[in-house]
Every structure is written in structure tokens, then in C-alpha cells.
Image (cartoon, rainbow, N blue to C red):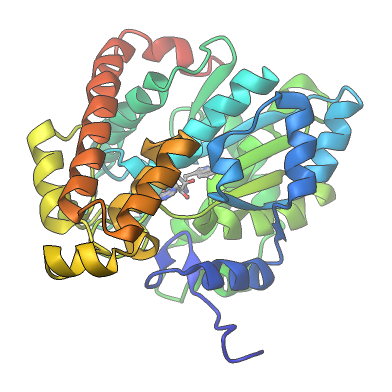
Length: 380
Ligand code: TYM
């Protein structure tokens, strides 16, 4: 391995430090995933007519078996999409990255969407959370998914403890094929890990093939996710062909940074570094102004003279990843900040306004979602 090819430690339960573009490139080799190249983007565009900015800007940067998925689609074998949430707290903006993309996929391909809420996972992995608290967050997180506008007729929520009756018989078929030594190698488990955690990855595998079980025919599955979740599905992909099902295809997103550290994964344990979807406009303003890591210079004079660095600026990254989909505007902001024409305070204020407009709408929609929850929960 060359000196610059350091392995980055990423599992669903630990993301070490901050990640540069080089780290994401190394991760492609380390995980054995494929980069999303222009040919593949063009192939997607053939079906969708336009491309989501998260694809053209490289926020979704890698995949597994997307060409196969499109081959099947072109033969008339329509896929479904599957993603999920471990309800250990309220939703933050980072969680919305893969979900917003799922909404685009559902609209463009008209596909079924399965969403798993892993209350069992978070109960077993988080020592300080009771099952009641996890279930309260499950409800709160469901509102955020519904608020993004998914089609209730084509969207199905699975809640692990609630749907155990249909999920458990499938999970044990998966579990029978996973050894403790595999989970140790993939997730870093030890002899002190509780046995529920060791079993858990079998539950996250079930939605990849549950629709095939229910429909009694093999249906391709596409999983949009943050790259930290890939290790679960590496195991899944080894096992499903042995059970007679397709391997799921995957599309991987980079992490939206926490406010304090550029390139780090936003953490649910540091509220100052995180914008929750339930934050008030004042909280948003305070957090961005005080904590968003800046690529600006130490004085206005120096900034005007030398310019800022958008490539390490969290506010710019948030606009690029999520809050400014307009390519012309994002380029203008990039250039103005880099030349020193735009100051850090102005960049932060632009982001604050964008976040608050988004959250005002989102909070209204999540209130309305309270009446819709039942429509989304899968009926056995
Ligand atoms: P969880 O709840 O940790 O995260 C939910 C989804 O959000 C992604 N994510 C992020 N994406 C971009 N930037 C960030 N800062 C960021 N933080 C989190 C995660 O990668 C994930 O896609 N075990 C899972 C729940 C799950 C699941 C799935 C996820 C069940 N089935 C299938 C993806 C696909 C979990 O605890 O995710």
C-alpha cells in the first residue's frame, strides 16, 4: 500500500476522524466498491431525463452492481428501493441526504420504497437508551420520512420489533449463515459484545429480500445509504445468493460534515455540531454563526486580499451537499468566497436563511405527517 493510501476506519458503529477526497478514493479500494463514473450517470439519465445534483456533484460517489440493476430494469424487471434509520435520537440534516435521494428515485422510477426502523438495533447498541425511548424516536423519525413527500401507496415502513412476526423467520435463515468470527472481523465485536448486537445484521438484511418473499418472485433491490452502512450489506451480499435471492445493489453517499470539523460525520452526540430538523431559527443561527468551521481568513482585510477556502468550509459544504441545488448559484458562491468578494459572515448568513426556509416547510409537513403515519406502516 502506498503511503497516501491509509485505511480509514468506517463501520456502522464507528467513523474515525474526518475524510478528505483522497480518503473517499481510498475507501473505494478498501471496500471494493465501484466509483460512479460519467458513463453510468448517463445510463441513469436515459431513464430519469435529468440527474439529481447529488449525483452530478459526487455526493453519491460509489456503487455496487448498479449496471446489473439497470440491465434488469431495462429487461422489465423493476427494482424496489430500501433504506433505513436507527432511531437513537431525533433526525439531523445528515440523515436526510440518502432519504432525499430516495424521494427523487421514487419519483423518477415510480418504484416501491421500503424503509426499516431498527429499534432493536439501537436498543441493543446504545447502553443508555430504553426500548420506550427508542420507540418514541421511531415515531419522531417516521414523521421526518413522511414529510419528504413519499407516495403512501408505494412506501412501506418496517419496524423491527413490530414486524418481528414476518421478519424473524427470514432473519434466522440469514443468521444461520453468519459466524461470530465474520461479525468480529467486519464490525470489531469482542467477547464482551452483547449477543443481540451480534445477531442484528441479519435483521438489516431482511428488507433486501422480504418483498421477494412476499411476492414469491425475485425482485432486484437498490439501497441508497451513507457509506458507513456498507459493511452490513457486504455480509448480506455473500449470503443472499445462498438463499436463492439477488444480491442487493447499493449506492453510497459521502458524509455531510458536523459543524465543527470539516469532513467528519455529523454526530448525534454533539448537539452544537448538529442541526436537528426540529431546531428553531434562533438555534440554527446560533449554531452556524458560532460553530460552523470556516475557511475564511482571520481578518476582513486579509480575506478581501487573499480570499477564503471553500474546500474546507463547512457552510459551503452544506450548501453544496444539500441547501443550494442551483449549479449556477453554487458556482457564484464558490468563486465569490474564493476571491474574497464574499465574507464568512455573508456565507454563513446565506446558509442560515436556506436552512431556516427548509426547516420551516419541513416542520409544517412533519406536523401534518402525524395524521398519515398509519398509512405508511406496512400491514401484514
Ligand atoms: P442511521 O440511523 O445511523 O443513519 C440513517 C442513514 O443516514 C446516513 N447518515 C448520513 N449520511 C450523510 N451524512 C451524514 N452525516 C450521515 N449520518 C448518517 C446513514 O449512513 C444511513 O444511511 N442501521 C442503520 C439503519 C438502517 C439502514 C438500512 C440504513 C437499517 N436498514 C438500510 C441504510 C440502509 C442506522 O442505524 O442508520
